[in-house]
Each structure stands twice: as C-alpha cells, then as structure tokens.
Image (cartoon, rainbow, N blue to C red):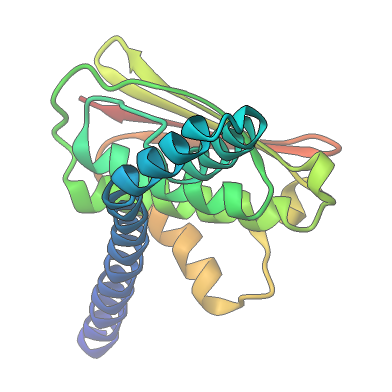
Length: 215
C-alpha cells in the first residue's frame, strides 16, 4: 500500500509540474505578443503618418482596422484583481480566440484568497481546457464559453458553461485519454482539499460546472 501511495504522489507531482509548465508557457506566449505589439507601436504611427501626408485616408482606415483586429487577439481582456487568475484566464481566452470560440466573461476577485496559486491554476486551467476541447467538436458559429466569477459571501463562486455536441459525455470524456481523465479527477481532489464544492450539469447542447471555494 505504501508503494502505491508513493506512485500516486509521484504521478500527481509530475502532473502538476507539467501543468504549470504548460500554463506558464501559454501565459508567456500571450505576454510576448503584447510586448511585440508595443515594440511595433512607433512603426505603426510612422506608417499612418506617411499615409496621412499623402492624403491616403482610406489606407489609414484599413490600417486601423488591421491594428484593431491584431490588438484584440493579444490584449488582456480580464482583470479580476488576482494575478494568477488573470494570467490563466487571459491565456485561455487568447487560446479560445485562436480557435474561433466566442467567450463571454465576467470575473472579479476583490479579496485575497487562501487557496494557493497552484491549486487555483489547476482548477481554472483544467476546466477551461475541457470547455475549449468540447467546443472544438462544434462548427465555429456554435462555439461558446460563458465565464462568471465573483464572491458569494465568504466563497469564491466560479461558473463555467460551454456548448458541446454531446452534453456530459462530450465534456468529460476525451480522445486525449488517461491524462485528461486524471486532470478531471485532480481538479475534483483539489476543490475537495480546499474545502470547496464542485457540481456539474448537462443539457442537450451545453455543459456547466460550478465551483465554490472558501476565501
């Protein structure tokens, strides 16, 4: 039994390490895009000034539309008040945009949380990974994720709803196999460890998860 416990601990540690590495890489990629856009800002201004000097106002309109679309893909769209939550949420929203998934999000964390950054990362990251994967089974016009996060009394309430082709089955099972199932089990274990609650519900073409985490 002791050997089995050690094997489980080792698997959990490996999973958490790989998870953090992947999320930090995603966040760094997002911030890298933002730094690149800021670096090119002066060049964009010079280009538009050149168009203005030649009276090419239609070209300026086209250029502004291009910049607006480019900035939409890289800007930080959520500021919850919690650094780790912002990093993970914005990283995943950037990934969702690349996959043509519409996201409607409202999130705020106005207080300090007792939950560790690692545990918060595991919960938010895994749930959003599952939602994104489920949406990818649908055509782009039907892909939608709704996120709501706020305090309810002394609990942080996190609600996530995504469209899915097969309800519960599409959101809980995956072609990614054992690692994916382990991620779901790990999410549940972390919520329980933190003294929180997690519930799931499925409808014909939607899947919802609600999480309560004590402050």
